[in-house]
Image (cartoon, rainbow, N blue to C red; front, side, top):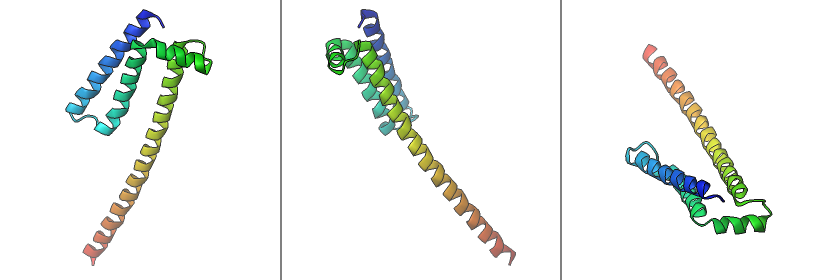
Length: 116
């Protein structure tokens, strides 16, 4: 892993952590969602500071270079995160639809009672 890439990863990870913390302080991001991004940033920073770990893992897994392994792992992590967020969004959309139907039924019942 080149020194330039390592420095870039450290800087981007550090900026990401600061950005997430600022968002938490401004109440723009929930802590449970922010933990994912902080952990990913710390993991990237760790691999950038200690590239030997990434090199050893890449060799063990048969990946050509440590950079390819890092990209592969990050893509996998983001895909899993994207899938879990999609499941949460689907669940929330179902709940919104159910609540909308309940509100419409209650409003209809109130209108019918008021007309009598």
